Length: 265
Image: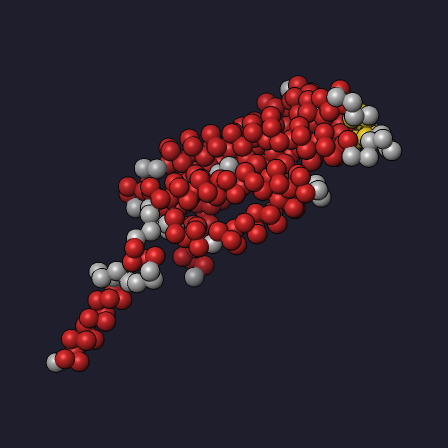
């Protein structure tokens, strides 16, 4: 069994090494601009302070900004490397696909990267400024919001990556539909469970307040609905499948017909 898995493990190692090499190269480049990148990252909280929230970003440990610079550089390098990571992921799963399905590599990488970027942009412009201002303003009359830079960065990265990957849902649904793994009926049947899971994920990722959770959960539900619409055009559920019937040309139907013929004989 291990011998059968060996080629796949070797290919997986190759794809991971290429992705990691790309991240390392991007990290070296981003580290040279870590201050500029962090100035961009801290704009939402700086805007909150300017709007009346009492507080500031502070350094609470001697080497805190060194680790902040490293995290900022890795975060930026990961985002820059997303097209390469998606490309390597597709090359890893491509051997198990049909020839016409392998041609989807370019659309997968292109639209996957675009949707990830749209998720980051939407979060940075719309969602994150509102969340950070709301959580800092709560109780600001009692205590000043002096936030450690490393804590703010970790919070920022968690929310941003959550939105980036959430926006991949329509792309994932499209390609799973293209290869015939799911239909629009599949997502419809599991809609209630998906909504529960969405709110659980939102509760884990966001701060412990209802408003922040809704700001993540509602876009996720909307994207789930968009995924259903996409599958309705890409791979709609047949009437036989929706009624739980087996298609007439399915192997199960053929087997039943053979058994009936043998009885008649």
